Amino acid sequence: MSLSRLALKRALNCKGNFSHYAKPSVQPVDLDYTVSIPSNGNETQGALVLVHGLLGFKRNWSSLSKAFSRDLGRPVYAVDMRNHGMSPHAEPMGYLHMAADILHFIRKLGLSDISLLGHSMGGKAVMTLALDNNLPFELLKNLIVVDISPIKGKVSRTTISYIEAMRRIEDLKLTGPNARKEADRLLVDVEKDPSTRAFLLSTLITSSPDSDSARFRVPLDILSKSIPEIGSFPYHPGEALYQGRTLLVKGGKGRFVNDDNIPVFQGFFPNSKVEILDTGHWVHAERPNEFKDVVVNFIKKSTETTSDA
Image (cartoon, rainbow, N blue to C red; front, top):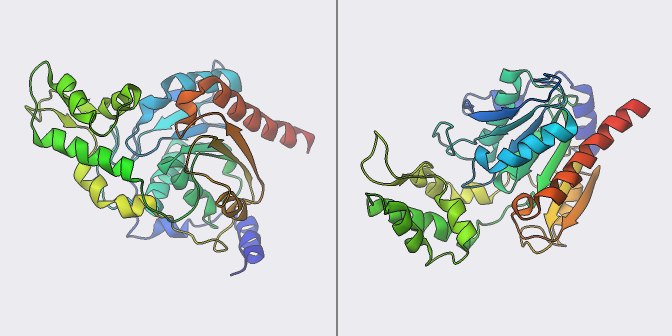
């Protein structure tokens, strides 16, 4: 099917049947979440949904969630993706399944006119959802992708080394009050930056009723097996199109988005703009205030456009 026919089908099929996500093989899970409600009490209209990357979780967005809700005057939801945080552990870990989880979450809570924001792995998940031509066009108002491209590739060797190191830490069955300190010492071999190590250790549980030794909240066995899927993307260029408002926020020092794959992004998302901030891959953590302003201004512009119409 040509891009123009896909676009036409999408525009006409506003009450779509969510065909990709209705298949028995694509079973969504209930995502855990936090929410920041604005002072007007609105819980659903114009909601902003935040989706973290690999090894992240909803708490990464705590400060920004409150700031977004305050500045936009709308509810902001941060979710834990499957196999992360407090959400269920489930296979497979492909993007059609992650997109199904997000859609299930949106429909279950009755959210409308939403803005979807995803970083890294979460960015690929929200792009996958947006590109399904059976998604009702009016459901998604704004798409915001943070430092990731819609391409098939490989997960970086650095990320793989993190997961391998985390598995070694679990295998050591660390116990006692110094378990976290010892885990941090072991991570130094693969990551010198203390803030990155703190991020990796943020999901380490040092004691629980389920285990006498330290373990990570994420299922490292599932993530290890899913590395090829996490690096991939379910669409080829020219295979799908989303014509809604889209923003790509790129870290100027990052390696995940380059001059070669920006045109690929624009091919999938022709109604898009690119903002570049002076950061690495962790755009929202490195420059939170600048990032917030870029996102808030982009979303507010959609409201102005609607008012003018």
